[in-house]
Image (cartoon, rainbow, N blue to C red; front, side, top):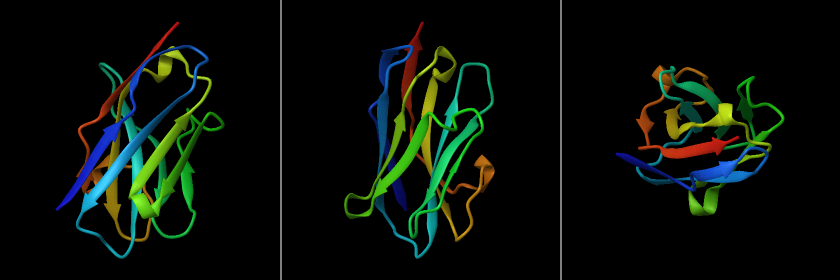
Length: 124
C-alpha cells in the first residue's frame, strides 16, 4: 500500500507564492509518476503537474504553465509544488497522486493512489 500526505496549504493573497508538499511512503515501484491535481468547489478535478520518479520528466496543465514548478527529493520521498503569482482562480483543494508505470498521464482515472488533499485559498 502507498500513503500520500499533502501539507503546506493555507490562505494567501493574490500575487503571493506558496509551496505545497507531498510525502510518499509505503510500497515502492520500479517506475511511477507523482501528479498534482486540484479541485475547486463545484468543478471537476483538474490536472496541475506531474513528475517522473526516475529521470526528470515534468508535465504541466495549461492553466498553470509558467507559474508553477513541480520538483522532487527522492532521498526524502517528497514531491513539491511551488506556486507563484497566485490568483483567486487557483483556490482549490490540491491533491497528490501516484500513477504506476513509465508513462505520465493528465487523467485522474489513471492514478492509483491519492492523498487527502490540502486546501489552498487565494484572496483577492
